[in-house]
Length: 196
Image (cartoon, rainbow, N blue to C red):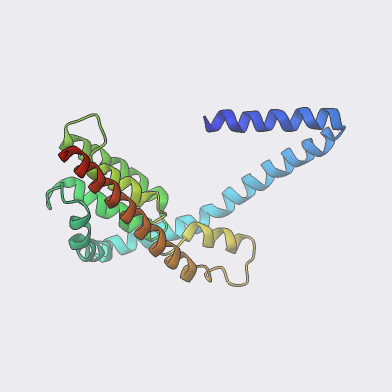
């Protein structure tokens, strides 16, 4: 659906430019945008490799294991349907930890594995309570250190590229709390409806 919306917008823009006589500006914007996208992508590689390296060092030093242990009591309450020592719990904790450090690319494979494990646990084609909670928390932009945004700000020579960390933590607190509250409200409404 999103692809169709993008294609529709592009076609409308090109047709408008044809009738308005501004095709040269459209061509200039196309090539300039493509050039900037490639430059930005290549420029981000070094910063992302640095943060991924830091994440690997933290993992080898046992920092992630400590964080996982710290988060475990809280996360087991969020997912009461999953046994404490089930592999899904490990993937969920790893996914949350990677997301907190802004490493969305590293978190995605662990998120997919967590979903697979939760699907095996529920033995159903329908989304389980735990899967819905996991999706709600993941879409609430669970981030403490937005490494990609910091990298983009550094690329464009921001005077203080890390000044958004405080705002990001506040936004994460608000959005994640809201996601958990909405998830719980819908869950308890469904439970009450099924009891009738």
